[in-house]
Length: 205
Image 1 (tube, rainbow, N blue to C red):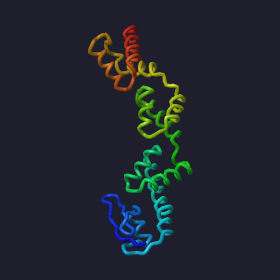
Image 2: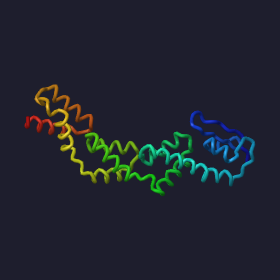
Image 3: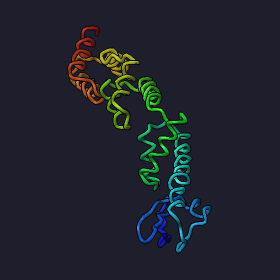
Image 4: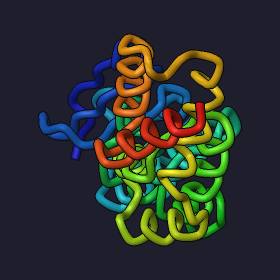
């Protein structure tokens, strides 16, 4: 087998390697150079396997660790980041699996930390919090378990935040009531919860 072509991937520091005129793998340019690869080079199946299973997975794993030093991320987020960086999907998945094995990635831990921070900084409904975690690729069983750990009461959260934001205003004014409606609905609370909160606020003014 022969490396017949090499293409630089623009702005990613990666190169695409073609063997016998067919795409074989993408590799960081620094690893391409350090492994003495070049066009018209003869390469064996064994060498290709080593590059795919060791060199590329190691490079992807190290890139994943760098992403995690900036902030905690879910398994799915790291997988997407690695693919966006130019690594092949199977290499990216192997790297994610290794990061899980050594404890760098843990979606249960991530979900608990995410909920803790979101609950502390922003009043959102249980449904909205679950939706956010789902968008990050977290498994539904993990989401359900994490949400149950926090025992979030939508009504209590909605009432507390509405009092904090609108307590000094006259809730009986139509304009203020509409603002409360929009505020709570935007954060994912149900119409039932919203109406209950407004009734409670009106009764205690």
